[in-house]
Amino acid sequence: MFWAFSSPLFGQTLQQKLKTAPLDSQFVYLNLQSRNQDKDFKIIRKTNLDIIRQNVKDSLSIYKKQISGLKGDASSTEGSLQSLQDSVTNLSAALQTEQQKTDSISFLGIQFSKSSYHTMVWVIIIVLAIALFGILAAFRKAKVDTEESKHTVDELQEELQTLRKKSMEREQLLKRQLLDEQLKRNS
Image (cartoon, rainbow, N blue to C red; front, side):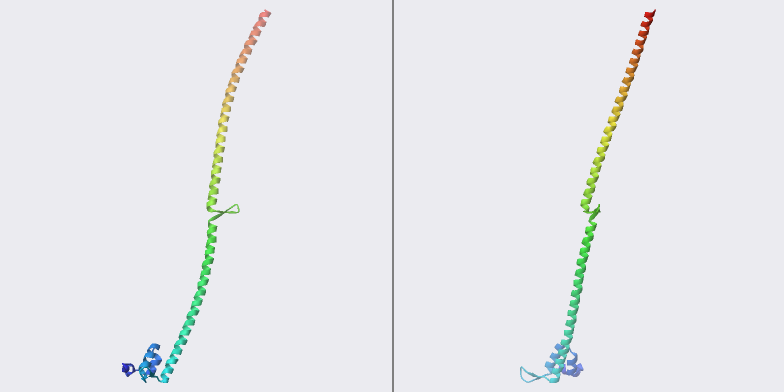
């Protein structure tokens, strides 16, 4: 296995592998290429260790840049999230205002809810209908009373005419009798 990583089959030297491979693979290559001093210790070339140290520093700086970029993205996302929440709050307030406007009606300069307005309109309609029926009933009663009065007047006029005729007839009869009496006296 030792020969597999260092063999020219891969076409790269250890230093080239250390510069191009991922960090985890670099440590594996370094471990395989290092000489054993003891069972638990290995001897590592300083140049190889410097390469790995430089690679770790480069990777750390890249990761730090990525982290700061992600933090910047997160803060800008939080800012846009906050602005969106503010927009939603403003839109909700505007929507509620518009709903209140659409749910209310201005009548004589006073704001009424639609249900109150409808109730008030129906009460006014019912009161006007009752007043109309009252006026119609009073008109009908007045018309009936007028017709009865006309009928009574007509009857009274007929009686008066009858009485006049009778009184004229009586008067004429009395005049004739008087005339007859006067003629009898004069004759």
